Length: 142
Image (tube, rainbow, N blue to C red; front, side, top):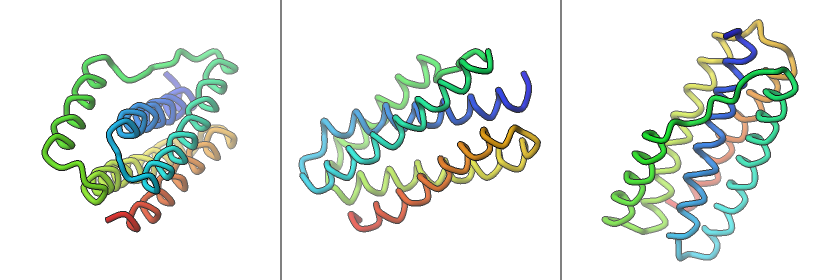
């Protein structure tokens, strides 16, 4: 697989994880202000996910989504973490940790695939900025 396809699939998978995770949390969260923020995040991840999917399809690349086992593990982990503590602060902390992982992986992939097409790099930078902005906004809910 070439660098363009690999970077697009990273964006696709990362944003898919965001969509799936936030969607699950929206059903758990009770604080309305926090829920509105999660809906904003959900929509942002969804836009990036759709842009990555469109770019993959336009370039003739296969979409490599998140595996079923990883989806199940994430679903169970969220359920276990929120079973113990459903507070807004705890859920914000979980999301900040996830977004920090996303930032680290985004920076690594930008360096690894620095020869990718400009449009793909821009989409990766858009995801990176979105993750960084999410971290800052989530701090308000700690």
